[in-house]
Amino acid sequence: MLRATDANIFFAPGIDPGTLILTALPQFPESDLSSLFLPETDTFRASEGHFLFVDIGIHRFPALCPGTQIPAGPVAPITFLDRFLEDRLDAIRRFSHAINGRRSVEDLRVTPYRRNNLRQMLRVIDGRRSGATFQEIAEIVLRADHVSATAWKSMPERDTVMRRFREGMKYVEGAYRSLLYRHHPLP
Image (cartoon, rainbow, N blue to C red; front, side):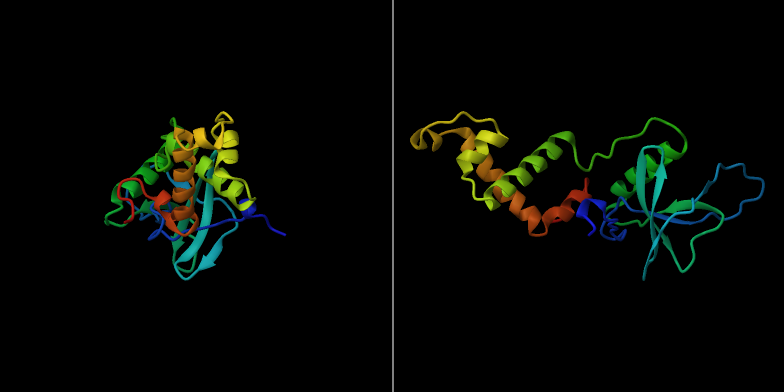
């Protein structure tokens, strides 16, 4: 059985601005542009084209090659000029840094602070689904002190753990796609 963490999941570029669109590089006379050739890799064929991952060092980039064939020669990224242009350019910039061996630019769609909050949200949801009370969850996830039920009602950890549950449930119910956008979150 395939575990969810082992599955290759692709989002179309219209949904995830971090998905690169790679197409055959036009031939320019007398150009010495460094070229990227796609490595032999497994692809997922869809109506949009071929989805694949481009691995460069420790970095992995989801990509789409439109059309029925994967380009055999050098490729170049192209992008949509839409409201997510800045996010798309960030992805191209990270890709450029990786292929040119420069220090990688961090993907800022999910900041370390936000990543920590998301991790806490998932732990709170798991705890609730396992039957734990909010107070029990706060003691484990937020390292809150064990206090009486009366004192618990006025603790800031109570508000935090309940907020993490509410926000986490929104992600579980479909708002997780907002994690794909940095500059223009979905309404």
